[in-house]
Length: 116
Image (cartoon, rainbow, N blue to C red; front, side):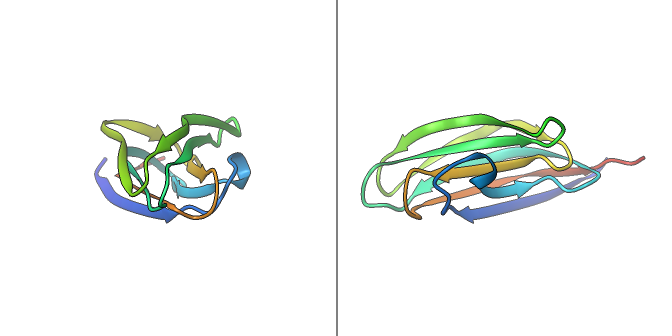
């Protein structure tokens, strides 16, 4: 299997998770994805909280990756580097913040096509 590399970014606006959260990335049909890097930035003038979830399509379950993490104003935080989160087709990375639209999430990884 050869890898297809990708990067996705999202400006958050959702203030609750689950189905109401902002979808940052969805693993395409017939692929397995490895999320290798994930960074969050807070553009607000004060500290605020954010949360990131993994939606598991096979069980329709949302799992917390990080939950209500406080991030200082105008700072960045690397959530994932050096490891990976493996996603199957239909799985998602979902995020939300406590209020307004100040957080930005960028992730990158590899997609592997699954042959029949």
